[in-house]
Amino acid sequence: MPPPALMEELEEEILLRFPPHEPARLIHAALVCKRWARLISGPAFRRRFRELHRAPPMLGLLCNGIGDPDGGANSCRFVPTATFRPSPPQAEQRGSWRALDSRHGRVLLLRPAKRFEEGGLVVWDPITDEKRNLPSPPQHTCSLNAVVLCSAAAGACNHLDCHGGPFLVVFVGMDAGETFICSTYSSDAATWSDPISTQCPGDDCLLSITPGTLAGNALYFLFVNRTAALKYDLGSQEASVIGLPPEYTCWRHAVLTATEGGRLGFATVLENKLYVWSRKAAGPEVDAAAGWIQSRVIDLETLVCNDVILTSAALVGSADGVDVFFMYTNDVIYTLDLKTIGVKKVCEGRNVFTVVPYMSFYTPALGAVCTGEEPSAGGSSA
Image 1 (cartoon, one colour):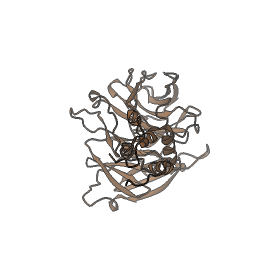
Image 2 (cartoon, helix red, strand yellow):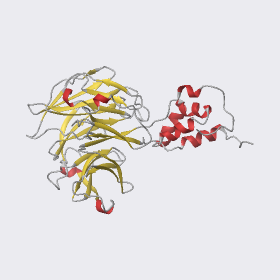
Image 3 (cartoon, helix red, strand yellow):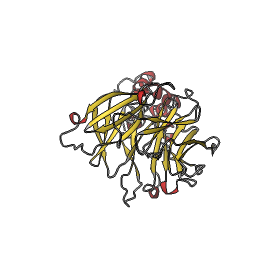
């Protein structure tokens, strides 16, 4: 005699509590019976699943600099950190693309050799494999960076399921005349905005390739010299320069991040210790240096195995809003989780210079599996 069937409401409550960072478990559950397949692939379940778990899980890392089979210098590889596997970009593109940013389920890719041509910037959805080629940026620059954002006004979207909706790409660069150029691409308008220019305050304002950070309603980009950062206010569309923590004059392996509370953060590894700062709210009367508060100092030697060598350790990225950093040392990438004070090996790779996390919810769309008669109570697992 088969076991008694669970009430449908109870089945849904159980399925909703599957871990979001292991989407394969939902796929396996959907294969148990057609009723579960219809439930899991339905929009109501997807909405409740996202609302229950709130924070999108990290499904993988886009690692810039891992050598491809042909030895390409600007290679980009997706390294899964969960059971999710994307539809990868075309094989011939793998060795010539760089991941600039990933946000709200989208990835912004750059082809360095064609960065000022149409298609040099591409927005990619790893879940659907949809790619959108952007027109060439409005002006050539000596250095550049960019981020991709949901186009909804601040506070109008919870970003739990907007990866297929309209988006913005904010482009920043510095031209030969040492002037900052900022322009925004709108997927709705399919065009770039008129560029906004701001004079560089110094002689060394080349933008770093380190991914930009969204904190509050502003974007932040590091300079190559790591002593200052460019701030671009999304509301006023004004650019300015802020100083970084003054305790050390050269943050060679530093990253910006957004803290869990939404503040701008800054971190670096120095002498086997992780130093973390957060930036307090400051009015016009407070200078940049006074806006930084050192929040953490963590001895990494107490967290890693004895065989891990930290002499060349460098931060190569961060996950905004979840207090996670990515450290690279001796051809190995590790995650540094400030909540658990834990270090975890992710993957190996040569010549990694930046890491961009891909964070998104993923629930299966099973199509034809959802058709047919209702299963019996004794359906078996597949």
